[in-house]
Length: 181
Image 1 (cartoon, one colour):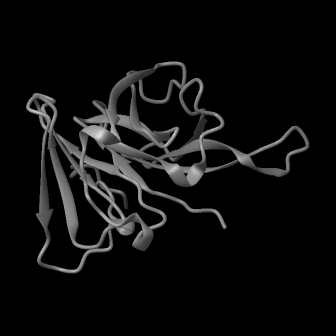
Image 2 (tube, one colour):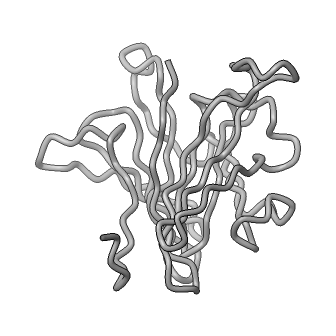
């Protein structure tokens, strides 16, 4: 089963892209579940691009990674050895050679005190980064919870959401004046 994650991004130019991760292909053009690519569809020009993940991330498990938009930049995040969450930033959108490691969080710095037995697919998803870069909002597979982490003070707040939210269906939306019709 291929899990497609759609993210919207509005770069400096007047267009929108839909971005998702998918399995790559081997040298015989067969699906290769050990490799993946990042696909991008530009809605303004109706062109399709395929990008490679950041260097060294080719073997990252697809389910333990994702794409997001933080501070108006396209980002790729992944679990690193079960100990850290690494976020890469694409400095030149569409150029897969422009990935730079942006942030790295140790799970030990983000105490969550959850019973992981109830949530075997537990993973953090970065949802928002403040303008000054101090505060990060994460969501995860725990229902009705968000994690607000202050990098400067190394403090965590757990926000309880009053409504039932399935975080696996949370997507970025950046308003645009460009019509998609």
